[in-house]
Length: 288
Image (tube, rainbow, N blue to C red; front, side, top):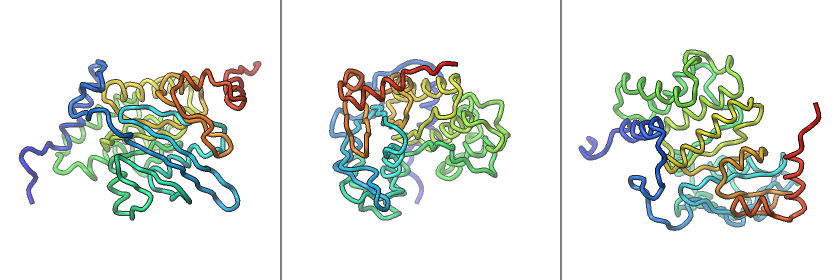
């Protein structure tokens, strides 16, 4: 069946988004074309628990994310931050509780149903998860070639060039992932994620083992995706300074439980001893 003449080509929304990002102009989320009025949360975790063997990783964790918000998940290593993202992608199933995306419970979906969810959500993994045998250019083009419909090669090439420029990777377009630094891999992974035109982007420790300049660039890009395009993001990080620059809300995991969920300011002012310890250690500068 032929596509409806009124249905936009995949080129159109992505090209329009890139126009906005390249213009540098901030957009009020409520004025974004097609942005829905305030309503129910886009993402809901409700009493979610999961364990591996005898170890409970998440226990009775609940939080919500509204459309256009950035949630930062904070906590020490091994408290279930990354597991939360894998649950949302459907890579793991909770032992208890429900996970809802835009009104649809995903915990009971089969693989076909999860594929539909994953077309709306994309994840930037710690290691980038790039295809080793493909160049930077080919990695970024992959979602467009897989899901781009009738896009011509020159249209794909144009979009890829713009996405690569957006993350500052123009000088490595023909390189293979193995030759890239950790920061470059993350930047390229973000470009590939944007090529998939998601509604929600998940970032797993985007600044770990990344130099401060690249970390700042990644943070600025994540912030621009929210302020200019209204993207919904969940950022797992242990870097409080990075979280402060991004977060609308904070989820603090401690011992597998959500010991805080709420606005950034409330987290910074919390008198919970575990939170105070986390903030104090994060602010500590080790002597050279």
